[in-house]
Length: 250
Image (cartoon, rainbow, N blue to C red; front, top):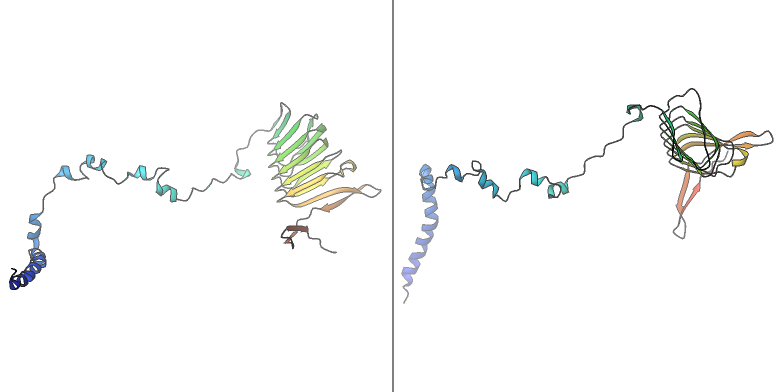
């Protein structure tokens, strides 16, 4: 048989023993630390490297590895921008035939035209030439030009095309025939076409101030025609994208 009076009296004693014990320890002041166990030097992680080896915290080199989550969340480093042409190391001029390819490079402000006699199987690469005139004699296959400001090119005929990239104030004169001209990032160009090259097709992208000079009239004078730069684009009733050249009256 349970004595109800004894059970009721035991409950507050237990409660008092729990919280009372806590407050009793706090009231001891400095003596509260007397019961703590002293840690020896060989049990301290900052004094014992062997304990750090078993730690689950990754080392700094591991946390910065290519496969770590820290690196995966970091934005990629910015790409190096190419050096301006004015800061590039100046290389000696080069004009040579390598197999079936003529290479013309690094001519700067040449006082006399550079002449090449080419054949139908040969292509020509012109790179980083400034204020230079180049004369191609004979019928070559194709010509590629890059980073050559103020370059003047005079050709007889080509089998394929003249491809010009990043060459401002470019000038081209065609004496014979030329199927195709490709202009990419060309700011300023003058193209002179002969009677035999009136069927030449011109493809331009990211280019401006490009003029074609075509022979017109009985006097065979050149007439300058500007390539269009302003395009109007809209979506028609069929959902198709339509682009048209904007023509200005007057």
